[in-house]
Length: 439
Image (cartoon, rainbow, N blue to C red):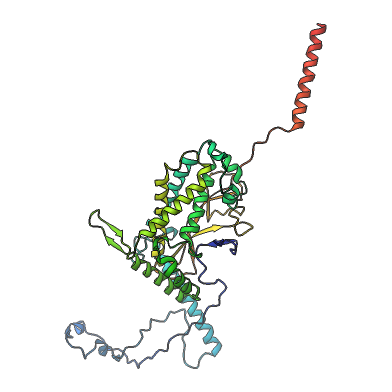
């Protein structure tokens, strides 16, 4: 399988950037307005609306105001800050400048309206009726998945290693953990910090095999056989054809509707609530999860302190929860994706600067270094809002768990220090012998 990190920049994501940041905005062209002649309005009697019968379809209440019943766009009252526009009173440059000014004001008001519909940390507010996303539940599921991986790693990989680690195995530590940390050998020997490296490896494999949809054979676990056969080629074709904001909104709307139709939520009459009912054969999903768990256990077995057979059920639950989380992310109109930061090389997942807005150090050290030594869990990012608009804005919903503490190897005392200590001891011993001899 080709490495998805070979062509990555300083920061890569599970989904490609749908809208290039350096793109040129398309010029806004207003629609032609047809305004009918307006006559000065007549005073309306309080009973004017009551006298009109609901059955009369030919008469319109607009006639009382002197307006034509022909549909025409409603013109809002002019702001006092805007100059009055009269035909022939302004030049062409002034009209073009005024047009762009009004367009920018409209875009700013639209974005401000979208921001007001959410609360703190870009989460839905109670007063928002339009926000119908499962974002809160999605974040809770992510925290539960992180906790399950941490508990499983600490239980089966903490403490002194057994004789199993000295047996020959197919995969070396450098092949498995070399891109996670340059200090992986000390992590594997450390009894307390070894689970941190195991968590980073499990998250790395989940990102590549479950959440990543760019490579063949990766992602679409919840889709069964439809993933590589049908959905991958169609989804890649539509995603790569997106060039502007409107196309991005239509693409994500199509993606969310397709997933919801393939795996709809139905009412669970026995246990209450809702449950997922795929419209296709779901047996390949279970086989793929079991195969992934078996390969993961065989690779991690040399560094385990207990038999991983005892924890295979918990590992199966972890991978199943990851697949369910990926399905829930794909059901939303917003673009949810995991973000992993890289160092000097595309496949180097360590050695970059620490940023408080996107990362969280698990050590809680005030005098911590500003260099990330190990990325334990990735960050969750949302592109666009829950209604499927404004995909040029992105938010970090859950920060990445990183460790900035550098593990140092305990070095034995040097030979020069040993010789100096031995010389001092021998000198003291000779002086004491002479004192006993002549005393």
